[in-house]
Each structure stands twice: as C-alpha cells, then as structure tokens.
Length: 370
Ligand SMILES: NC(=O)c1ccc[n+]([C@@H]2O[C@H](COP(=O)([O-])OP(=O)(O)OC[C@H]3O[C@@H](n4cnc5c(N)ncnc54)[C@H](OP(=O)(O)O)[C@@H]3O)[C@@H](O)[C@H]2O)c1
Image (cartoon, rainbow, N blue to C red):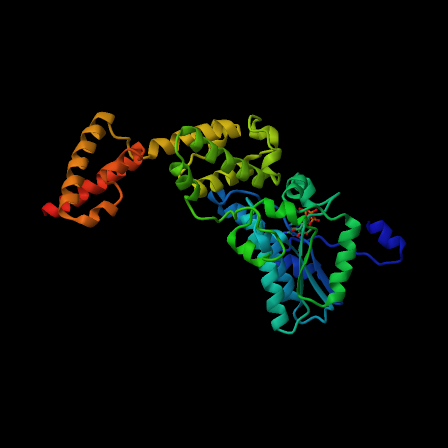
C-alpha cells in the first residue's frame, strides 16, 4: 500500500512509536502535521470475571492512552482532521469484549471533549470489515454476521470513511446491519430502547423479567408440559446466541456442532440464569451438550427446587381435616362458600395447589389461635 501511495506521488514517511508512550510519540510526530487518523488498537477478549489489570492495560494502551497522547501532543497544531477509529463494541456492548468496548467508548468521549474545546474531532464506530483487520484475524466475522452484523467490504468501508469525513459529524456509526437477525440475537433493555422502531421486538429482550420462565415452568401441569416450556425457552435462547431462528435448530445436535464457542456458552448460561433465576455452573453447557439434554437437566433442577410434594396419605388426612374446618366455617359464615377451597372444589386441585392451600389454611388457623 505504501508503494502504491509513493507511485501516486505521495511523500510517505514511516515512524515507529508506541502510542501509549507520550515521549516516543512526541519524537515521532512531525511539526507540520495536517491531520490525525488514529487506528491503533488490540483485541483483548475475556469474560469480565477473568479480566485482569494486564489485559485491561493492553486493551486501553494503544487505543485509549494513545488517543489521549495524540490529543494532548497535537492540541497546539493546526490539524484539519482528528479521526478516531472506534467500534460498535463500545456503543452496543459486545460479549467478552468489555476491555475493548471501554477503550472504544473512551474514543467516543474524547471526540466530544475535543469538540467542546473547539478542536476538530470525529469518532467513527465501525462495524466489522471483511478481508483483513483484527476481526478477521480473531475469526469473529462469521459469528458477528450471524448475529446481524455482516462485514463491510474494504471498498464500502472506504466510501463510508469519505462520507463520514465530509459529514462534519463528530460521532458516527459506519456499519452494515441485518436487522431481523440482529433482533433475533436478543437486545438488552438499553439497546432495545436505543434502537426502538428500528429492530422489531418479535422476540423477548434478553433483559426480560428475571425468573419468568421458571415461574411459567412451575405453573405448567405435569412433567411433560414443564419440559416443553424449558425446551421452547432453550431454543429461543440458543437461537438468539447463534443468530438463528429457533425453528432451524436441531435439538439433539451438540451445541458445539451448531457453532458454540466458549463466549457463546457463557452468554447462554447468563441468559438461562436470568430466565430461570438460577445459579448455573460455568460448565453447564458442556455437562448437557444438546438442547434436549439441557432441557432435561434444567427441568429436573427446577422440579427439585419446588417445595417438597406432600405425602399422599398426609394430604388425604389433611383434606379430611380441611373438609371439616371448611364445613365449620360454612356453618358459621354464609359467605364462606365463595372462598376458594371449599370442599366441593378440593377434588379439582392438583397436589401442589392442595399443598399451598393446606399451608395457607394451617397458617390461618394458627393465626386464629394466637
Ligand atoms: N477490523 C475491524 O473489523 C474493525 C471494526 C471496528 C473497529 N476497528 C478499529 O479500527 C482500527 C484498525 O483496525 P484493524 O482491523 O486495521 O486492526 P489491526 O490490523 O490489528 O491494526 C491495528 C494496529 O494497531 C497497532 N497498535 C496497537 N497498539 C499500538 C500501540 N500501543 N502503539 C502503536 N501502534 C499500536 C498494531 O501494531 P502492531 O501490529 O505492531 O501490534 C496494528 O498495526 C482499530 O482501532 C480497531 O479497533 C476495526
């Protein structure tokens, strides 16, 4: 590329410097600098739980500290452009990229800060690029495309760069979207608000009420119905993580064969913990490697967490006690026949409803004796 520029008559000089080192950078910067395009950055993907100082430092060094050094060292120079190559990971968040996202968000903030000081500034939140670059090197392009972020070809990216420079805006997004796949991948509440009207909310947001699915499963009558609630929930979540429709998934295929990697496994675990209000082991997706196996395992876990089913003989005896108590209540209060659980209705209750009623009755009776 440098040769092409030289052949086109451009004078090219290359200086090497660590941008995070202000001294090195100061020595490398020419006095007649006309503009800055800041592209330095590294990916340091890790789950928040495993982010350490070293990793965070590497992610922030070239990109964030480098941007700050460029800002301070050029503040008195008459630069025409100060263009920061930021990423959608900062604006939208990106699983496993907390450090990288922070570094990019810093660039977006720096553009605002410079603009407030009357200095030229532009931060461009790029989607992925095909062909070359850090996303290709990290092997993340296909996964992001499946989640609704298809890559930009270098030609389109250059067109967008030109358009961005001409726009005079200080903060832009330059990315391609497949909104249907993007919506299917599940949006957290903040993103859903940000993209309201753009992305159809035909799937529940990832931030849906905690424990809602556990409640639905426990309310289902019988083991088969409970398993069905869990299976449907799992298909939704696995589909969202993979950026595929639930209908297209093979419930007996190992998740790794469907394209799961370790970050996706952690994302799925987080989604399951939210929907089911459970703490799950980090290896749950490996212990139960298919949708079917997971549905079975989670059904058993939820069933085991329910209040213990009462002994049928004890229920029988207590039902008789309740019959008597209710009959006594009826005898003393003509309106009592409207209460749930009068003798004629007992037969219609399943064992859990009966147990709940029993507990309620015992509590009530106990209260009366106090
Ligand atoms: N590619 C994408 O899909 C994509 C998407 C969104 C945003 N972006 C952003 O666009 C920019 C360019 O991306 P790219 O794909 O071209 O990345 P790339 O090929 O990995 O190039 C990044 C460059 O930054 C340099 N660098 C890192 N730390 C540095 C430091 N402390 N001092 C000086 N140089 C440093 C690296 O130098 P060494 O090789 O010597 O380490 C490398 O040449 C990045 O900021 C990236 O975050 C890219």
